[in-house]
Image (tube, rainbow, N blue to C red; front, side, top):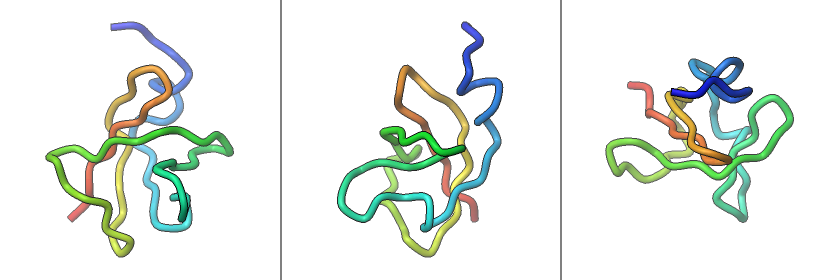
Length: 66
């Protein structure tokens, strides 16, 4: 597995509704906008918080926190 900026600094970060774009499927982490995929095939819930659990290129994989 390669080590990159996203893995070193973003894995484990928590994001909530203020980090998501209202008009595009993007999430902002540390001032940078990324495409995202929510794990377990869940849809985005504006009332939930998400943890960054992985990345591939410029896509972050998020897991909804319970």
